[in-house]
Image (cartoon, rainbow, N blue to C red):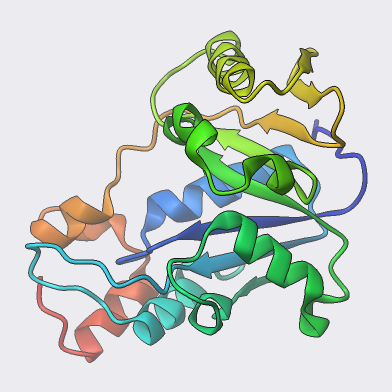
Length: 222
């Protein structure tokens, strides 16, 4: 049985997606199986990043590959290139604010931002996090095998550092003075890494067949 959200939500999933892989796809599939979303927006990062890997895919390529990777999961899923239009670096607050003011996104209802639990300890350092909580809810996915109680405890600790009061219910954390809720995805660890895919050849099986085909057609050699 799916968990209900307060109102129709657009799930936002951001990342470098260099390259997008089946782990990324799996996490969205799990989210769709557990929650009802009005729509899903995949947001590849426009940031310039550096690595010692054999490849670094450019932004337009990562957008195209993301469309292939996330196809046929949800009837209203789309990949956005909005980050290339924003001043760099792009903070989550900046992204959500832009979406709310963008006429092209005027048909979107409200937002829920997908994040890994490894990001929770850094929430006190997030740019304008208090204001961000007024714009979006959050969906937390576990990067290891953490129990729900552990995830909730980790989240409340980060909120305490920000002097943000919150109450824990069965599967959520609701902020007391701000209309914002943290939801938690019931997921097992997904042992797939873009870094490993870039740096070695053994994990090509972790790419969607259409992504793999597109990489080969563009002569991207791992």
